[in-house]
Each structure stands twice: as structure tokens, then as C-alpha cells.
Length: 244
Image 1 (cartoon, one colour):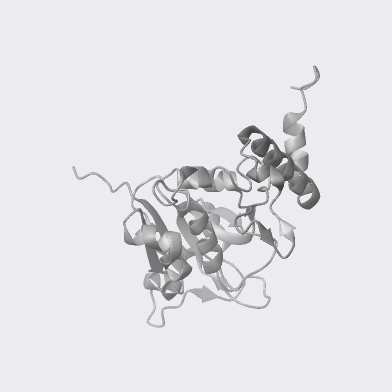
Image 2: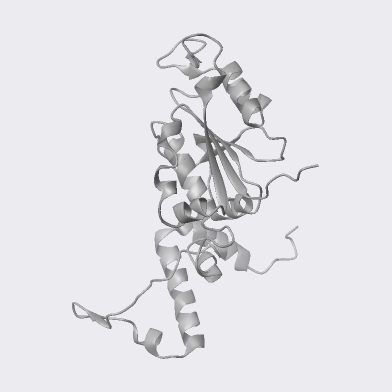
């Protein structure tokens, strides 16, 4: 029996396959794609349409504006793209669970997701349930379609794959890796328009540098993301006898 390829693979179901690879074809992701560290497949949902007009949508049941992506066409597209592997099936949607660094890390450690890019007013709810789609959001705003959101998710995953980033520490010492925003970064020149690099960073004392970075990360998180800081504070708080 021929073994299945182990390369991390992103399969994108979209009405606009020409949008890919787009930004994913340049910089770190593009170099890794060209060298075979990951693979990208963009599939046209219209290829699963059954009429000569390649129709994929219809009017909303119950009335209302816009159009809705049909369950039968999208289900056929998902089935045609399914390789038999146990892959996450994602739907980029503003009503989905917010994408987090921990979820990105989980997805990067797997075989790679199948991602559905919605369009119009949305997709028929029945196909979400029938094909087990996990709805994922990249923020509390609405885009024209799921393609750009899919690129965001794939880029976040690809940079964590082995061999993509120059130093593995780059993926662990950054925002959200420990539930905190990243500490400020500096480099040469020593002075810029009267502003100096903090003296402690050029002191050579690695323990003091580490403590400074931790304190700055905590201060930034407290000020800019109180929601994250509240979670971090709960994790630090000692358990009381009444806790489960």
C-alpha cells in the first residue's frame, strides 16, 4: 500500500480559486510552499454544480436579501475534496469561534485543514451540520468572503511548521504564546531621534533581560488586552479549597 503524503496540506473550497496562493505565495509561506514544506490546493466549488449554468446559490428560505450557498452543491464539493484523512473541516464565518494561537498550534500539528470559504449571505445551515464544519472567525467584522480569512488562518499555521522559520524560538517567544502580548523589540542604532534602547537590553545580563521582557509583556497585556490579562490572572491565582 502506498503511504499517504505527510506534508501539511491546506485544501481551500472557494468560488474564486484564482485568489490563491496570493500572499501565501511570497515571503516565508511562499518559500516553504516552493520547497515542499507544505501544500496548497484551491478547489472551485462551482465544479460540483449540476446544471449548465454552474449554479451554486439560491434565494433564502423565508425571504430576505441576497443569496445562500446551496447545501447539495457545497456538500458535493466537500466530498470530492475529502481524501479520507481525519482532517479538520473549517468554515470561515464571522459567527464562528475566534481563532486563537492555541487553536492555530493545534491545526499546525495536524495534517492540515479543509477550509470552506463562504460567500453571499452565508451557506445553508444543513451542510454545516451534515459535514461537521467547525465555524472559525478571525474577528468581529464582516468580509466580502472567506478567502482572506482563510489566508490569515493558513499563514498563522504555516509559520509554525518545522523548517519554515529560521529559529524555532521565533514561534514561542511572541504574542499569545504564553497568553500575553509580546514585549517591545529594539535593534540598532543605539539612538534614534533622541530615543535610546533601554539600557537593560544592552547590559549583557540575560536574567535581567528576561525579567524586563516578562514585566513589559504583562504591562502591555494589562493595558491593551484586559480580557487576556483576566484569563492569565485566573491561571496564576492559587486554588481555594472550594474550587473543583
